[in-house]
Length: 638
Image 1 (cartoon, rainbow, N blue to C red):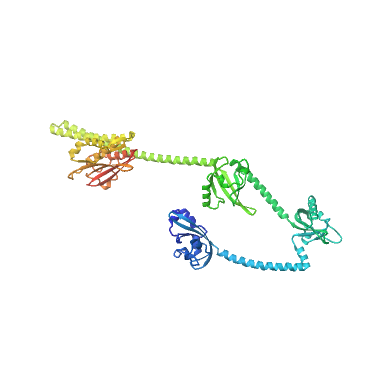
Image 2: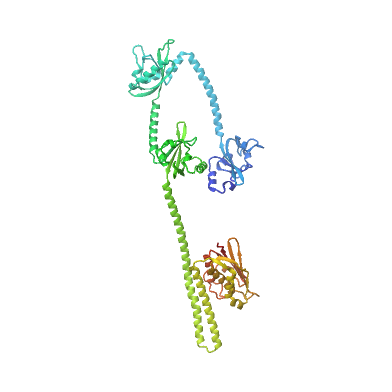
């Protein structure tokens, strides 16, 4: 069962997948203990299925839970599955704030098997107590019966011997006798000194002198003892005096333990420690031994002293490991979120004792040491590596930027080539067409005698020349926009529009078009006056050229608006309008909706390109037969 809880994870799918696969049964609860989420392990523990599950945490509890604090509910040690099977659990929980809400994060430990083992342990303890009582009873019997004591002595694995004050054996148990082949009878005498390595004889004598000087005290000494096969074993002896006659020391008694294997293990351990110390000190990386309980440095190698600019180990041993980090709080918080640091590599910013900062690659490994656990931390200086990586990343970024620019330039070049092809074709066509028409009219006029006809031909020649002039002016506007730098200045829009309308006055009056100029006096904009003129000139010209003959009164309305970031020019008319299928194409070079008006097809393209230079844009709303509205949007320059 997984209920949506985007607030909890803020749609972090990667964390959600990790939590779903977590081997520890995990629940996430709302404030009212509704179950928002259960991972695979939790659903398996409680027997949830796709169609059958529990929606409230209280329904998992064996005990009644009315008016009980939530923290107390989490401490209850028994839950139940969907089949009402009781399970013993231990619950670890944390409460987290999520925006205005909060939730509980629960990890469930199934303690059912542990409870079973605890029951078995309790049974074993009872059996052990019974066994102890039996042992005590047996010991009492051994004390009461002397022959049992003698049997016990000889059955000991440890050595038990007695000698007189000269070192001659008076008693040995079977363990000693079987190993050293010592036999005591009335015909021969063996002395312990014959079994002791010559170099350790003085140690034995010193131990005996100590016992004689302080009766009742024990002298402990380790001696090398020679076996019949000429091998040597290490025996740890406890020597003490005994008195057969009251107040008179008569013999020396000793208990010995063969510690040859222990000595070998110690030698091997010493060898290992020597090897570890050699590797530790000669490592090219900085190594630290850290106390797991308080995170303090126990030891470090010479490389660590050099890397962190310390003169001696005394400057660094005993300090908290986090003090070597430049950002200890951030790293500590991140390490806490990551959990166990064992075998995890992490790059951290370090600081030396002299304040130098450098990047270190840190890896930690927990290792056993006697009865404690310590952490071995290795820090490798990766500052140069980081610098190289940074250079590589910068080069990659520069390469990506260059590639983007190259791609943009290629796209622009392709666009220019395409436009150039169209441009050359249309220029050759649109320039030659009026010239050819004019030449034909001139030839006709030369052979015509009727003056009225000649005047008519001259009028047609004038129209062709006007068309050619308009086309050339459009080409000049296009060239100026691409060639000239942008010059920003304060422009009086009212004054500029009035000048443009004077230019169009004959055409406006001839076609009976009404001009509605809603631009107020002293309306200023900071922009390029030549480019603003090109834009308005083309839009007004279009409104005149494509006016409608089917309305009572044709008009062109001019307005300007302003918001916090933009100026908006609006040029609208009630002309013939533009069909929907052409509205996305009218800003392309040489595109004409119809031949009505005999436009060049380049005017709106020039408007679009000019606005690109000014970082502006143009929008169109048009209804065929009703008219069009062009909105020019320009950013406010400061």
